[in-house]
Amino acid sequence: MNIFTFVGASLLTAILGSLAFSQPASTSAFYTFRRDLRRCASPRCGGYFIKAVNQSRTRCADNRYQSKCYVANIEWGEQAEPENNSALLRGTQRLGGNRWGRLGVLRVSEVWEAASANQPSGTFFRVRDRGIRCIAAPCLTHHEVRLNSTASRNIAGVDLAGAGAPDNTLGEATAAMTAPEGILVSGSHAPVKGPAGRSQMLKATQFYLRAGKPRQ
Image (cartoon, rainbow, N blue to C red; front, side, top):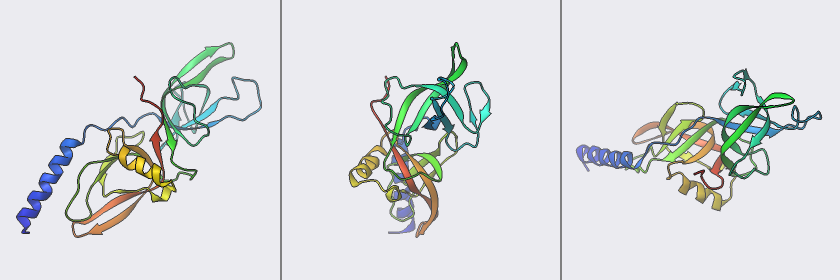
C-alpha cells in the first residue's frame, strides 16, 4: 500500500466516524454526594453533602462557593435513590424555604452507578466511542470531555480493566460508549505510541453507567 492509498483510507475512516459521532451529551452539574450523619435537628443536619466533580470549590444553592455544599434534601423524582454514596448525580440546586430558614435542595435528573466497589481517583470524564478504526496505532478511537468543563479531546482508547468490574459490566460499558450518552470514567492518562505516532489513552480507576430510564 503506497502512502496515498494509506492517507486516503485513513481520511475516509475519519470522515465516516465523524458523521456517526453526534453531539455529545452535556457534561455540566455532576456531583458526588454523601449522607450527613451529624446528630442535630433536621433539616439543618441529616441531609447530604454534595461536591462538584473536578472542581476545588462548589457553587451552592445560595450562590456561594464552598468546598462542599449542604443540601437538606435530594429530590430524586423518577430516579431511584442509590443504595450507597458511590454513585454520581447530575442535577440542579435551589433554595427551599421552611420554618428553619432557606436551605439547599438538589433536584436529580440523572443517576450514574459505579461499576465496582473501587474508590475512584483521577479526573472525571464522559467518554464515547467515535466509531473510528485505523490501520496503524495509535488510533484516536474515543472522545473524552471533562465533567463540569468544556475541555475535550480525542484519545487513543480507554482501558476499563483498572475499575475491577465484572465481565458483564465491562460488556455493558463497551456497548454504552457507542451511544450518545457514553459512560462516565474516572482515571488518568497514559502515553501510547506506535507506527502512527504518539497519543494518550485513558486508564480508568472507576466507571459509571446510567441508572434507570432517561427522564421524559
